[in-house]
Length: 340
Ligand SMILES: C[S@@+](CC[C@H](N)C(=O)[O-])C[C@H]1O[C@@H](n2cnc3c(N)ncnc32)[C@H](O)[C@@H]1O
Image 1 (cartoon, helix red, strand yellow):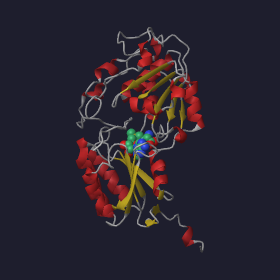
Image 2: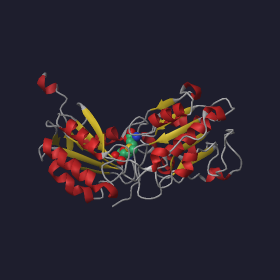
Image 3: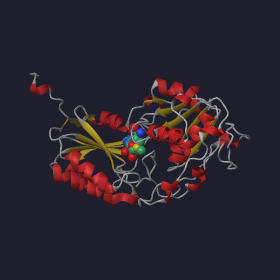
Image 4: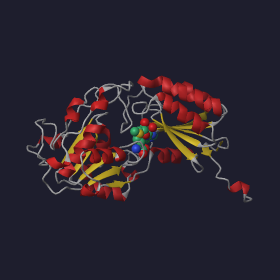
């Protein structure tokens, strides 16, 4: 089984949560930001918040709701910065290969002074872009709150900053968190000229590999209970599965929550026939991409198969979805109006 490798605002991990790290470019001395509240923490170039150092081991992976991650507070506020703020852009990288990035995303990254992101995502960025950056700040899985705050502090300190994530910044990702933290710092989105540069979300990258399963009404559900409690996820799954939507399942599996995947399969089977087509795509657009089309009745067993892990998206067809020539097809409804 592969290890969990894909993380963002909605993710969890098994070990190295919250410990912030900086890339080799951080070895250069002195602050890149000039925030008046710069801490002594050498891992931050920019008014690093108390949360970035205190989140270790608590910001994800634990399922209990009274986890101390709830107590994280923002460090520097807008009043701690004297500089004219720079720009903050949340950039979606798409599925993972350079050809899957939009021109707009590439240009936004080229224009940014600082790149901030989960280490795996930073590694997906082409070298010709990372080499142009003045500084790169990357954290391992689960540092999403500290690195988002770091990106904001760097922008408030006068740098043009891009915070990157896989797929699209609006899909289980950091765009919302950035706005929430900006607000909690007493700043505004306009102050840092906040912008979201969209990327191709995993559902669409994976749908493309499977044929045409998403052409009618489609709903996404994430099985990560790091931020949403499992009973709530179960209730959402019941609601969605009871209607005739295609369902895309994000964050389907990890070692720590096998039960969530099993429960999900049970709920889907309570509403859909066992022969409902299901597409499984692991690592769309990445070197280890795998694609499988199967049936809902077989899905639970595949939970222990390496194709399903934290870099997998599962597409559950509707009552009308069928498989033709190894492709999933969800009719849009043209056949009810036209002869062809
Ligand atoms: C925290 S979410 C981030 C989603 C991302 N913002 C997007 O728009 O696709 C992480 C989940 O996205 C899905 N995912 C991300 N990249 C993927 C890829 N290349 N292939 C398949 N699924 C992927 C997986 O379900 C993974 O657990």
